Image 1 (cartoon, rainbow, N blue to C red):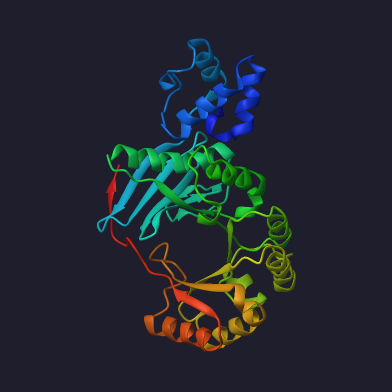
Image 2 (spheres, rainbow, N blue to C red; image 1 turned 45 degrees about the horizontal axis):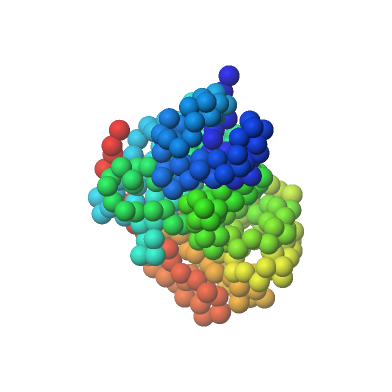
Amino acid sequence: MVKTSIYGLNKQDLITWFIKHNDKKFRATQAWDWLYIKRVTSFEAMTNLSKATIALLAADFSFDQLKPVEVQEAKDGVTAKYLFELEDQLMIRTILVRHEYGLSVSVSAQAGSNKATGLVENRRNLTVGEIVAQVMQVQHYLDGQGHDERVSHILVKGVGETFDNFDNVMKFLEIMNDAKGLEIGARHMTVSTNGLADKIREFADYDTQVNLAISLDAPNDDLRSKIMQIDQNWNFGKLFAAIRYYLEKTNRRITFEYTMLNGVNDHNEEAMQLAELLKDIRHLAYVSLIPYSPVTEKDQYSRSTKKRMTVFYETLTQHGINAKIRREVGTEAATKA
């Protein structure tokens, strides 16, 4: 029988568990402190809990169920990529990036198969515990390096569509934001979606300060459907109706991620279309132009040239669109098994 990950519980879940087992409510706070402040990796290390309580915790829960497969650290020390294997042998990749403003971790919301071409299949949604465990694995790794470094920013992405795992993602964000735990600020967390209109509306109704990013990659439906695996039910009409609802509800900026594909979506024509698409919401729109990284040598797409990206960027800014070409970091990596 597979035990539930202790990282899948929020504070109230833990309180409920302790009360159910005829223990004091404050014991849940002590356990929470061991998990996220002292960051122990076993129940036995929770020394201010009784042996009986520790035995009950160990009987019901496990610590993270992620098996580290490899760590790739860039030579410049800016990035580290972690490959984890789950109990069902599926894989997830987690990325740490060091920015001037702090340490950001990109976590997966879905698991994929480890094919020779990379993590290409969305096989299942991750549990809350599996998403939280990614952050904790990275934090434990940092703790083990002897540096006083703490994860301060979170990006949630999916092998498929992040919002297909909506409830678990929202609970994950709650756990990360807890003031008595890792205390990662809501404004320091971002959820990236391909654009599920109904979930964008639901996300808006949560009234959270968590940021929203939309992987756009094209300025029209026809081109977008050719280069992205998206739900055809959510065309641009429905998507932008949901975006406008989000903006009216929250008055928060949206980041539009646009991966630059050479000769595919990087013409001046597409730049003009994108500027037109965003003109009515440009005061709350930010376009992140992302240099494409081919998955394999046989990849059908290649990276836009620096010149084409620059011209695309200039066209957007000339039309009043706030945009930036994303800086590349850690392109060279050394592998540690």
